[in-house]
Structure formats: structure tokens, C-alpha cells
Length: 126
Image (cartoon, rainbow, N blue to C red):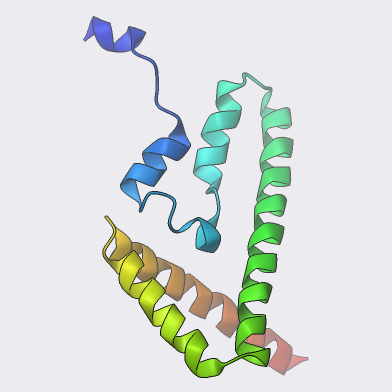
């Protein structure tokens, strides 16, 4: 066991990629906070500096993913809807085949549904 202490640690992004689809989900989830947090802890920052950088990274992640989603949905709104659906089904089939693919797809879908429901319910009340 003593030899393990001297072994270099793997990059959290690499570990995540190996566990959850080799970054094929990146355009849907980005770099998750737990991965970013681990990287920041490795920098030896104070708790306050880590929290600040983590928030900035999360904001950047959300903005990047929102832009990707807007671009993707623009194809649906102004493009060929049948082509959009065909391409989406091909992508889902490919992602489903990855390690933890079905679980990741289910989690992403459940979260999207929950956020949509919450947003639409809040808007209906105003």
C-alpha cells in the first residue's frame, strides 16, 4: 500500500471520461462541478478562492452549454425538423452504447424535464 502514495493521481477529467462516455456527453453536461472542484483543490487555493473560481467555472459552463443548446434548437426552429429528429435519434443511439450511457441519458432527460416543468410552472403563475 505504501507504493500507492507515490503514484501520480489521474486527472479527474480523464477518470470521468473513462467512466462516463469518453467525453461524448461534454456538449450536454460540460465539465461537472465535482471535476472542476478537484482540479481547484489540487491548486492549493484557500476555501474562499476555490469557491470563487468554482462559481466562475460553473457560470462559464452554464453559458457555454446554453449557447450550444440555443444553436442546436435553432436547427429545429428554422431547419428541417425531420432531419433534426433523425440526427438526434442517431446521437442517442450512439450515446446509449457508451459505458453508463443509458444512465447518463436518463439523468440528463430527467433534469431537463424537471427544469422545464419548474420554469413553465413559475411563468404560468406570473
